[in-house]
Length: 518
Image: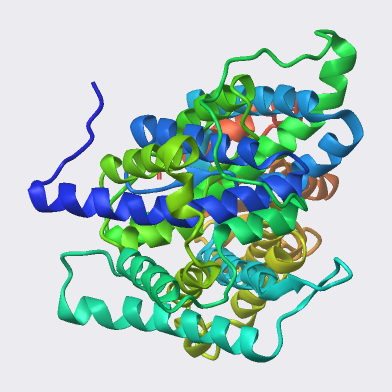
């Protein structure tokens, strides 16, 4: 039923090995994001499995990895702390329903409206966020039970293992591409630490530090079905609905932007609306099976793509291996050094950050450079959804301002003494003032033609401007004609109804309101 592969045997091998690599890197992130949201680690691990499996099978972007994410966790923490985990599950279910509706209504296409400078800022900001998130791995508990930065030999050993991991990932592909470099680095550094009995934090050490439980383990059971234990009434809806809207928006924005990025890296085209539905179905399932919800993960997606994962099988493998780790293989994974995973993520940072943006800063308009820096900053200091929203708004305002300055007209007088204004440029809310300034009703002849062959009437403000212009000529007892309106312009004027007809725009020579030729 589901297409797990679309390539030969070599690609199947690459997908499987890449999926294993992704699963290993998913474990500490799922645990960390669960702590951010204030829920048990198994809730984050179950979310990573459910989201990863469902979106791999049903999603619109093969090769993209989904799971529990920080963007979702930071929204959930307030709800969990104030209402408890059951209300979180209810919000996740409603979040998924909203995402499914977004896909059915084909709202995924609106991601195309995100300008390229916003995309660059998003990528750079997210790379910085991933980097900063790894710095927490350089802290250990002191004798007083407080977290402090590593110093001395512990720090040097950690840095050395990270450097070794990054070196393997960088140089191994030059020797062979038959085995994912990231997985080879994780296995190699783990064997090195075990063989030399090096004292460095492992995944289980990280888990026990975060929980404060010396017996904490990754081992868990299968996700179990459970309807959220909340009252099914309007009061509950009032509580969870605002969170669900924010969660759905954040999840879809991050997922669709990640989809766009993977499209560019693989030179293929994903299906945004299908991905919206898959994300929604996965989150509804999370809510009923004890997961914290999530969305696409740019870091893990980059690991997968860089390791050769291209098909759905890579995502299915990652989710399956993650579940196997939780059920039976936790002792094997708990010994993996945190340094190996940090090294992998540092390479993701280096590969994700658009270093070329530094070169183009001096070659692009100042407004575009400003948007890149602005979106990166907001992504780091606030969140992704706010950053994209701010970037799109600023870009739209800059676009409106620039186009408001290009409205002008070429004037000519016919043999009959009619003055003709050939208007050029868009007519919309930002250019109405400059449009009206083009005309001189007092000194113009009795018969005036406004030709829109090289202009475009875009919105209600433009119609109002035309109304105002007509009133000015009528007050001077002069006749105004409109011609060469596009079909879209004519449609807008017709929608205005009496607003247009009250000033008798129809002219027997041009038949403006009924004739859209031009």
